[in-house]
Image 1 (cartoon, rainbow, N blue to C red):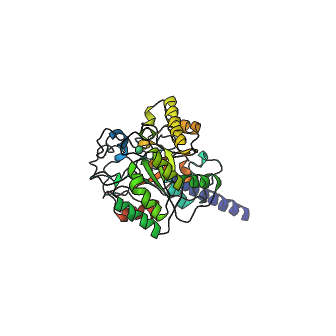
Image 2 (cartoon, rainbow, N blue to C red; image 1 turned 135 degrees about the vertical axis):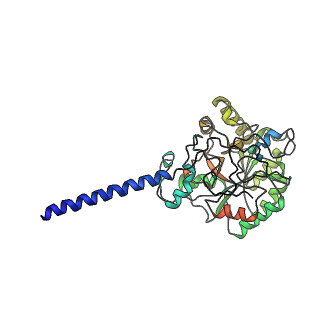
Length: 358
Ligand SMILES: [Zn+2]
């Protein structure tokens, strides 16, 4: 009698266990995120209509919060999700292969939960535990005012943001620091932040650089190398050298702001190599970091970057950078001129910051 009872109790317990396991599995699945294969498919710019307009394609791109730019260009990527903080607030999410399988950008969630080792398989040795910091990499372009142009941030606003970072104990780190942290576990300061500037505008030297020096901050500038010493409004070799000597990291942003995913593997590799070579000749040192124009890339791009020797690459995918992004597909935090300080503050303090249309 006693053993029969034991059998019955055991059976009930086993069933209960099976049910609970099934429940966990279902929940984990539901965490996979939204899909967006379109990425930053942007055609317009925010007003830089000059002969260099092509170089400014990012004017609208990656800016999930720039509805005032009449929505042109980024409509497909950033639908008019006006007031919800919901799913569509995941623009540009693509996995390392650019396929948009979703889920990878939920890394911040998983990190909080500390359970789901998603995409850890891409990085041997990574563990699902929270050992690596998530770091906000801020995306700037031009420091200069132009009405309605979300990527031209007035100098005063930039200064105010830098002041806030300083007052709140942030330390600017480099992409090399982040690379060491993600590959070797090198410690980072308590509140790390990375400042990046895309395209290589002359005002990065004229306006941003003096402010960075004033605050003792460092940054990374991703340069369109065909513009150097050639295009008005863009950095010269001399300016690049001076800033590099101070400690600003110089990265590549292709030769002519090409949409890389439209090019063959060979063409991508040639472009990427050439831009790297141009910068290395100016700097006299290795160039290790890259930013995708308009956030566009495909598997061939990743292959070409590895082949060319790049260590990191940043996208326009929204969110704080974390190890599970993959070193060549790091997420960034867009800073728009339309933001108030409150939005800026939120993006620096909340890894799951909502998309705000202000
Ligand atoms: Zn760009």
